[in-house]
Image (cartoon, rainbow, N blue to C red; front, side, top):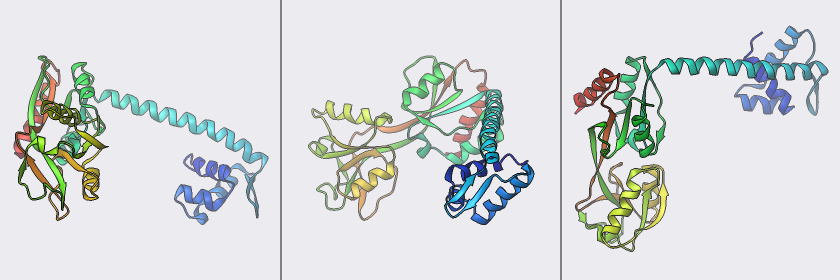
Length: 287
């Protein structure tokens, strides 16, 4: 019996409707009907009574449903255990601080992961501090973070630098400027990356050092949202130079603004120093 068909049966059982179940499973009603008939032939008993009101489970169908749920649960647990053991054997893990996946050379990292089977390929972004902590605690072997960590037991190599700019919309008073002071955005509604990003607190601190609190009207999770909000004149955006200029939104340089520096970090005593050095060397080759 093909256990993958259990899900098909369970969906029909729960929906009581072949069309609805087929839609959920991305199957045609005809194809799903064949699967149910095949299961009934293997069981040697009807699992449903077909009526105008829908598919009504028989007593055999009710038993099959309960038992198939147990089998499915056991199978899922088995595959999860095997996957966990396989992941554990992949000793080298890479962490990404929020925003770094957008900025780094993804093709390079993917190729490196594929060529080194001991690396656990995972593309989850986390807070900058979380990635740093994982490297310090030796939970991951390498991390992409924003800014150079102060910790003395952590090695850091700058891999890329991106300007932090002001995004303004066509018609804004700063549209024709090529460069502005940070004070020029005082009292302006500001769109910023959210607290998950290192730049959020940097913007607040920089504004306070210039004598004002920024009026942050929107906090977003990715650069495209900044573009859309600026284009619709919700405010002006402060962010790394993630996208090019258009006739609706353009980037204006901020005088003395810091760059958004992406560092690769690792422990100096890592046993996987060879993997680390080869990954860093890959980035150097693309420069």
